[in-house]
Length: 138
Image 1: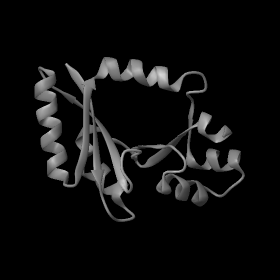
Image 2 (image 1 turned 90 degrees about the vertical axis):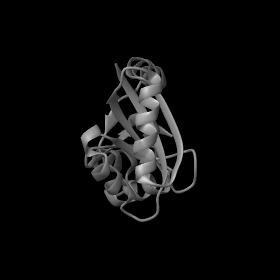
Image 3 (image 1 turned 180 degrees about the vertical axis):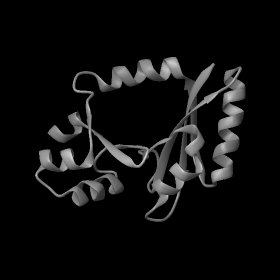
Image 4 (image 1 turned 180 degrees about the horizontal axis):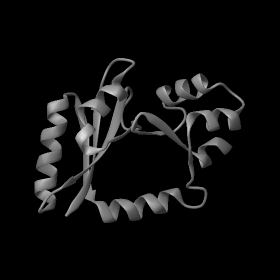
């Protein structure tokens, strides 16, 4: 069965997101600033396991290997997808940094700065940031 795990890591440095992506590359991570703790990052990965307990144990081992783990959530991928669809609701579309900057009337660097400060929600998908369109209308 497939599970999604969100590992919350308190990590210092300007390249914490890149470091998490590199460390978790085999799990195809999505990385974003965490709302759970100042200076923390959420890394969401997908993993296979026979049971929820096995998925928790695996995700915990991965998180502890990264160091600075301050949170962990593991749910079946089907449940994750249902929740994501509910949270996205209408306007669940995502855009890249350049498009977000154009819609906000700022530079792409200003968008990246807002993402880094946690004032603009976004997810790191591979090497690129994805910003919810609904966050741009506030």
